[in-house]
Amino acid sequence: MLTLVLSVGLVAQVRVQITPKLLPFEEQDGLLMVEAEHFHAQELAETRRWHPLPAKQSLSGTEPTETAPAASASGGAYLHLLPDTRRTHGDKLIPGENFSNQPGRMAVLSYRVRIQNPGRYYVWVRAYSTGSEDNGLHAGLNGEWPESGQRMQWCEGKHRWRWESKQRTDANHCGEEGRICLDIPAAGEHTVMFSMREDGFRFDQWLLTKDPAYVRPADGPETRP
Ligand SMILES: [Ca+2]
Ligand SMILES: [Ca+2]
Image (tube, rainbow, N blue to C red; front, side, top):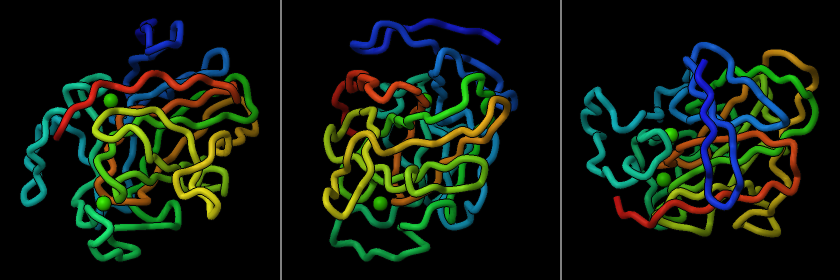
């Protein structure tokens, strides 16, 4: 295992682990940061699938031409949930096809983690959104999808990578801070999971922190796909 210490935005220093994805990612000092493209399993991906970009394989019929998000993504790669058939609010919303308000039903990613310090972890995700229909995601743990992991939402920072931890609610469709969290019951190995809410989602990294006052790292540069 190789551990690098990188400077991320305004945050002093964050540990980033480069680990073979079949081995668990290890939490240290209440923090764990993982590249989205380092998942170990993808399930329920018949209708929508996470494609690592830049992709080596051909994505016939759905191959995107965009390169700018990849250039500014951490690790030079990210996941794009394709195909994206609901690009604007005017495109038809089809639950179970281009939208899933229910977590754990479509395009489910799994990541093995090893936790030393159990308890409540706040979930942050680095995403790149260009509109209003590519900015929703669900988080879960060990095959369960608690209310506190549902409906992650991005409204600000379009056309750039942005860390966010907001939950869409009836009161605020752009999301409320401090609500997205997973309660890890015991030390040891667990599986952190993410699933589709909206197709077209671009997913670069995620992190868990025990700090409820975690300061959001700076946005990436504005780029256009
Ligand atoms: Ca979409
Ligand atoms: Ca990445």
